Amino acid sequence: MLQATMDAAQQALADLTEISSQIQAAVLFDDTGKVAASTFGEPSRADEFAQAAGGLLAGAEELKTGESALTQLEVATGEGSVFMVRDGKTVIAATTGNNPTAGLVFYDLKSALRNVKPKPEPEKKAVAPRKPAAAKKTASAAKKKTAARKPAPRKKPDAP
Image (tube, rainbow, N blue to C red):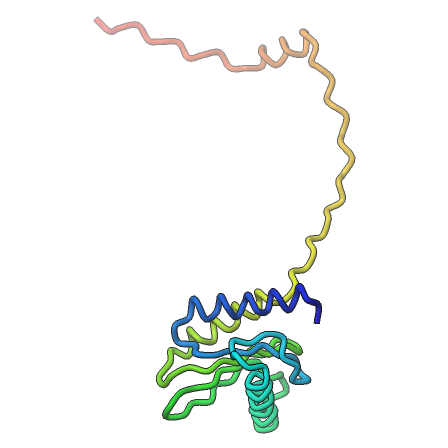
């Protein structure tokens, strides 16, 4: 992963933990388990968490019904929850305390994931050639236009 992308990933996780008081720790990794960014102090802890989260996703993928890919998962225990959001080959996983607001946590994780993805270059619009400026109207053309106007309504004389 490019250094700029890794910096963006680390910044996205820093922003995530700053705005979401429910998230205790988070890691961003790819489908091979390679960690791009983490809030864990020790890299080995981030690697372990990424491997465990990847295993949970793989297990849930086997159990799901339907053909569409699994994009989000929550695993809850009495002590807390693990949330995962996947977009293509990129996964963000986070831990929370017990009884989190699941919808808000998923929203925050999806927002963080969007901040990591490179923004597509805006398509440059083809500039149409300019039309030549319209010729100035002649005095007779201006008079014709004025003559076509309705005369202003006349005021009625005051009644006696």
